[in-house]
Image 1 (tube, rainbow, N blue to C red):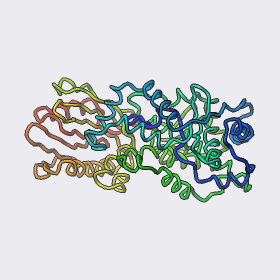
Image 2 (cartoon, one colour):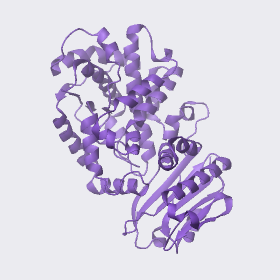
Image 3 (spheres, rainbow, N blue to C red):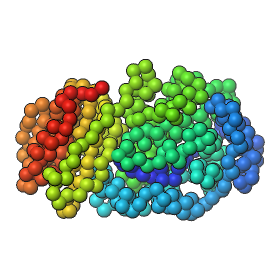
Image 4 (cartoon, rainbow, N blue to C red):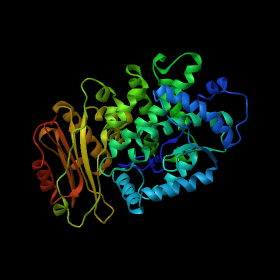
Length: 443
């Protein structure tokens, strides 16, 4: 599926529509009263829409729109399973599952692969296939929803003419947050440009809307169904992030620039979810790219443990992880000021997952606040350790329970979380990581 820090969410099958905007009535008002029950009829409808969307984007020679295929849910599932197998090995999916378990985001016995396929079958009503260069629309959709879905996928087809979508959103191990930001750029433009297209009938455009809260509310409520209803909250939020936050980013871009400015962002896209959630960090005069962080080799200090993943959470992931344990609003507040992070998840063979996570914040004050949230995070995750906490310098703390220990430590604008580490070596792990880092924030 879409993401890899990760979770493969619908990245496994290229950009896809998870909802039908609830803009179909506006589209019906401008379309012929006809029943679209064949691919040929959809292709006839697609041709002029494709050219109009290209004109909105400032593309002068977009060529012809791709063919349109109607497929059943079962056919879609087979295609998605093939794409998942092509992009992700069973070992990769298992590593993703263990990473989510380690952070407490899914139950320990969760069948992640089956969930992905079930969710995609339920939620994906249309998609553009950048390898076969075709648009696929669900044959179970009513005509007006086929039209609305078609517009969204035509935007993806135009994007593919500019940037080669399959490569742009290919899995990139170790850069999960950056990949989610790219997905948000692609889906955000597709949603926003569709809105612009539909508003054109009323002699309006998206910049005339005071905000997008209504649209984002519709997106959030449109992803319904038994599978997504029973999916863990983090996976639901992750599934919707590219649409909810992406359309907000595209809206802010369009308020300041024509749609043609998106071409420059394809060449130099946002590098973090922080830039998507706060567009000024990418679009403003004071651009704020993430600070690259690395962790040193820890294998000699963790004998008998196997490295599961080495990746980044980003502001979205950090806020989501903390929010699951301390409340969503508190999680978002805790992640504000994020500048970069790197985490490793290890497996100890006994069902435990040691975690090492280093986070860079905007300044020391923000780092101190995050350290406090992480102390509460550890206490909530391991309530039996509450009485065994030992306060440390800089607002840090250490917990030890027999053979395992956890700690939160802050130095300057950097915060270190070590969880479920061997008690005998946790201090050496901490010192090794700090010795590999400069003392102050890097800009």
